[in-house]
Image 1 (cartoon, rainbow, N blue to C red):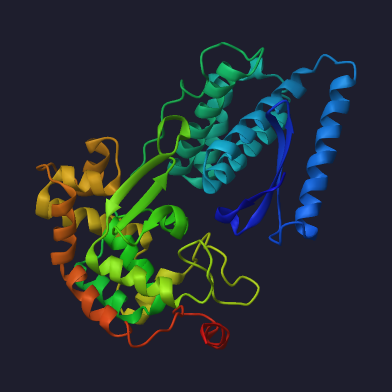
Image 2 (cartoon, one colour; image 1 turned 180 degrees about the vertical axis):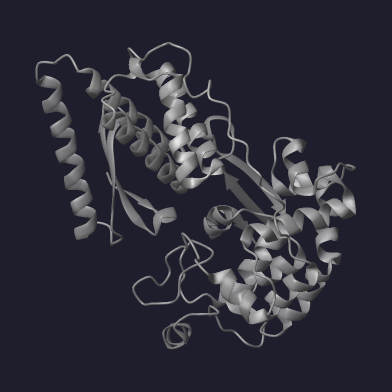
Length: 394
């Protein structure tokens, strides 16, 4: 039976199930239950089950080395699609396709032929084409895929992991630009409506971009208790991690306003409003959004992740490393230390919220929100179809 996926823009998720196990899945466009989109999804489920059962009845053939090779890649990507976030799955698909294409181009059609020299040649090519940082990303993904294959693919070579034998490429990362507080305030002052609420959510939670884009009113926002839930897939083997935070009063005020003023009563907290076709759909990316706001505010460009770094720095300076670690949702303090490049004291969430609120950014939030709450109820992006949104609000 098709399942409504609110986290995928109310699309219908079709799953072909045999003996309680999923054998195939596919997304279908949004639509009413029992409507044409839903019926198409259900028909696809039935056809896939029949196709799967028909294949089982056929006499099994011994797979070739190349078929085993390709089966490992397909099985791992199917596992990644089910257990990891969308962006991670897309990245792993790109890496796996690139590796298989590289192997086939050199006549390597068996997993047993993949050794450290071949892994080094593949990664060195990526390093020359895309840089050492990207090569290390490919190495990490291939190492994870190889470990998974050894555990879960029958007949997978048990030889030493070839990608583990290739050392990471040295990377000169330099220092990440973290804007001064006054620049963040200038950007907030030129943002309006939903844009301002989103930026305040980034600052007061220290969240990652995907965590904010995936926020759900029903699952993640508790306006009555002033709580917000963030979810990532940074656990071991991509496992989901959940953490609840107390909302700062200014963030709670902003979300209460946006909940009432939003032009579409959809479950996702933040939505696209630039066109009728995409109205109400969740964001997957906002290319050049921060670049345009920074240009409008006449400050050096910075992105969503720079706000996360700024939040960590503000909390660290006020209450120490442990407070920044709690805000960032890091399992290890050493990860947080990359953000703050120092060590510190311990704190609770009350001190975290106080530190964020007492910063010049937090203090500016209250004044900025007064400009349009509650007397001026309007929901608009900094760059959206004003007529479309205004008509919907009215």
